[in-house]
Length: 395
Ligand code: SF4
Ligand code: SF4
Image (cartoon, rainbow, N blue to C red; front, side, top):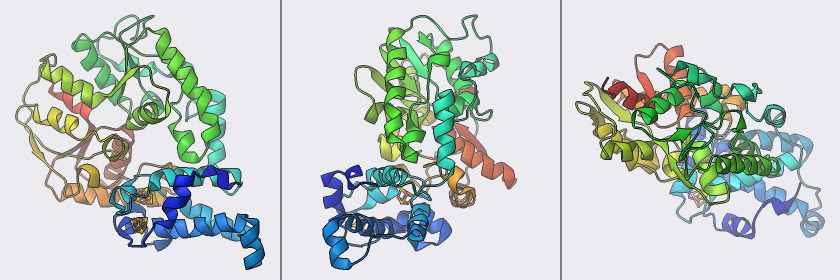
C-alpha cells in the first residue's frame, strides 16, 4: 500500500472538494442502491483518512495505526461498487478528475491486498489466455463464420490499410458477436481494405485498468501495437468504446484511430453504404467511454438520422449527461444486483420516450440492456449502431 499511487495533482484536487454533492446526485450507483457510502464525497473522505493514516506524523498525532482490517474490507467494497461512468467528474464544479482518482484508488487497494477475490480471476484469465474470458485466444475470430459470404481469408490478411480491433467481449460473447459480424459485412460491402488480428489480438488492457492491475497492462499494449504495425496498417478501428479509450489515452501514439460510429459516418457521407428506409422510432444511449470519455456524440446520431424513414427521439438525459447502463467498471462481476438495478433505471428512462428500439455504440451496453429486457420480458429492441446500419443495408 502506498500514497505513491496518487499524483500530486490528485492529492491537491481532493482538498478542493466543497462537499456540494452534485456528483452524488448524478451517480447511478447511489440512485440505484440508495447507499450514500457509494458516493464520491464519502469515498474521498475515506481515502483522505487512509492517506493520512499512512504518514508517520499523523499516526503519532492521532495515536492510531490507520484502518483496521474490517474497515479496509468495508471501504474496498464501496470502491468497487462503481461503474466508472465518469458522471461524477462531468458535473464536479471544481473540476476534480474523479474517474482517474477511482482508478488510482483501485490500484492502491490492490497493492494493499484489500480487494475483491474476483479480481484474481481477471488477473489469472488475462495472464493465461490474453483474453478476459479465459477462452482459447486462437478462437478470437471464430465469429467470422457467421458473416454472410465471408472470404476464404476470413478477414485475416497479411497486410491491410485498416485493422479492425475487435475486443474480448465482441470476440467471444455470443450476443455481442453480432456487432463484429455486422461491422465486417458493412466494411466489406464498402470496399474497405481491412484485416483482423485474429489470435494476435490480445485484450486491450481495459479490464486490468478497471481492476487496478495497472502494472500488468504494458506488455499487452506493446504486443497489440506491434501486431497492428506488422499489418502495415495506417488506421485502427474499434467498435468497443473501452478498447478505443485505451488506445486513445494509454497506448503510445503513431497510428490513426477511430471508433466504428465515426467510420460509419464517413462511409455514409461518401455514399459507400447504400441504405434503405426503416420505419422505426429509436432513441440513442451514449456509452460512457465513448460519450463522456471520448466526446463522440454526433457521429452515431448523424448515422441514425441518415437512415431514411427513421424517427429519432432523444433520451431525457443524453450526451454528456447520459446515465450509465450499469455495465461498466466490472460492476456486473462485483455486484450483479446493483448492475441490474442501474439497468432498470436506464430501461425505464428509454421506455418513457416511446421508442421501439434503443441504439448504442458499445457491446457492453447492448449486453447489459438486453439481459435486463430479456429477463423482464420487456418488448424493447436493443442494438448497436453497426447492427442498425446492417439492418438498413440495401440488398
Ligand atoms: S464513476 Fe459513476 S458510478 Fe462511479 S462514483 Fe462516479 S458517478 Fe458514481
Ligand atoms: S461535485 Fe466535486 S466538489 Fe462537489 S462534492 Fe462532488 S467531488 Fe466534491
